[in-house]
Amino acid sequence: MKHGFIKTAAITPKVRVADPVFNAEQICMEVDNAVESGAKIIVFPELCITGYTCGDLFLQEVLLKEAKEQLIKITAHTADKDALIFVGLPMMWKNKLYNVAAALHSGEVIGIIPKVNIPNYAEFYEGRYFVKGNEVPVSYTWRTEGGARKIPFGANLLFEIDAIEGLVVGCEICEDIWVPDTPAVTHAMAGATIVVNLSASNETAGKEDYRKMIVKSASARMIAGYIYASAGEGESTQDVVFGGHNMIAENGSILAEAKRFANGIIYGDIDVHKIIHERRRMNTYMAEEKEEYTTVSVNMTEKEVSLARTFPSTPFIPADKRKREKRCDEILSIQALGLKKRYEHTGCKKAVIGVSGGLDSTLALLVTVRTFDSLSLPRENILAVTMPCFGTTDRTYENACQLARTLGTSLEEINIKESVTLHFRDIGQDIGNHDVTYENSQARERTQVLMDIANRENALVIGTGDMSELALGWATYNGDHMSMYGVNAGVPKTLVRHLVQYYADTCNSEVLYKILADVLDTPVSPELLPPVDGVIAQKTEDLVGPYELHDFFLYYMLRCGFEPEKIYRIARCSFAGQYNDEVILKWLKIFYRRFFSQQFKRSCLPDGPKVGSVAVSPRGDLRMPSDACARIWLEELEKI
Image 1: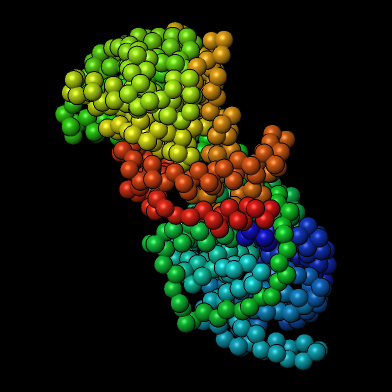
Image 2 (image 1 turned 30 degrees about the vertical axis):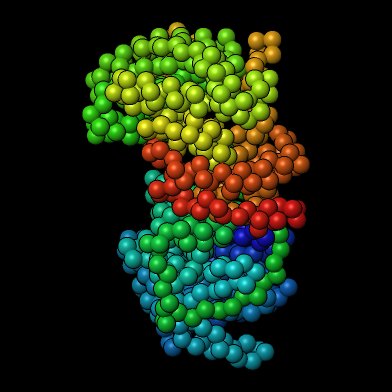
């Protein structure tokens, strides 16, 4: 439960129709299994104590009496179980029969939730037995041999678990999720961050996909966790078959899904903090104080969950190849469309772009070519400028030149060694002192050259820097930091590589493919220090850290709002066997230091298109003061 994670379980037990004694034994056995595995919220199917398919037997007094007796036994079995458990049964109240979920905790029934939407069609004819449940909770007298006490009875019940701030559980039953205005939506607006559903959904051809869709969409629309437990093997097959299609979802994603036609248990680690963060950042998500709701406090011991869920080590890149290719094509289109609008608005017909033979400038050039093609402008109007200096290697120089020529753009070479050397003389910089002045003077000279050529040609300078560099401040202020439009500003470094690879795979040119393949194989470097034996001496990731780590940190910090300790925890899982704990912690500290200290560079960024759910533009996604202090973030890491 630490860091907002709570382990949940959806269980389909073996049942015998109209045999509450057997069913209660199975439920107790499954409760033991789930609790032993660390589950804190456990959900069973609708009417699981009796079986869903009892038909007119629901009207028999003996069945109803035994169902209550077995609920009492199940409740007693939970006395030493620190979990919130939901089981389904038929229950009488004021001479009417209700299809209900009983909420159990530590040996007590703490609430009873009746089904609100009663189906009465085709294979489901519950209206023959059950009445619609009341929404506003009333006081129900729960009598056992130990005496009587009052418990809330109604659909508008919420269970607030104190072990995680903001963890509030609401409940609905089967048909409730299939109607246009589901109870769960109201629960969520009243504060529920997890909704459970006790269901008995039969199987028909094609229904699995639709059922999965409504569970995913429900969790996405409500920004909530959703636990769906359905009836399975053991129900009567007189007219229908039940498959035990259990699912656990979180904000539109399926965390766990049962294999149908096999009873059992699934687990899912729901991240309550992530849900709360998403609601907090969406000011259109308005929670409401609802007087018609009753909240039951659930005291639960906080315990660290052993995580079964995984976190992608490359969160910006889909793992599935087909989805990845679709994403790459979509992003290239977004980049090109943004640049296209800038050209239509300004009336410019030419572009100036500095090409280095590296990944970022390669991607920017490819996007610019795509833009000019869409505008029916000649590629010759794209002026690719290569500006070799002290750190340029033959490999990157040749790749830059060949790429520009192969794409049909105009190529101009301007060697800046002499101008930079003169500049060093003017400011009294020792050319043998390879400090930050030595490096940044080259970057600023290149930008000056590009800007002046743009003036000469009445063109726009296309920026090449990517989002990862901007997050870390790995850009020379008023150097490569500046342009008239930064096409890569929303693209993280790990994604740049895949975009170039996708372009190479789909370009239908063997020559271009070979050039792009060599660019992809070249180490990331600003090439501002002299090469050693003709080989790149300055590798960015040796200095600033692995970009795959920094992109991971960036995503879970900005997109999910995770605190440093939580990011460190999940990074250890995601990069196990690749980076040891000390290395991850080292670069995480550097990430936070650089991210906070370099905000001033992001505060004055040129325009550039947002392509994903994370961006650092000061005009939209990241309204961050340039002088914010990183103290509390770094102090948390120092405690690890």
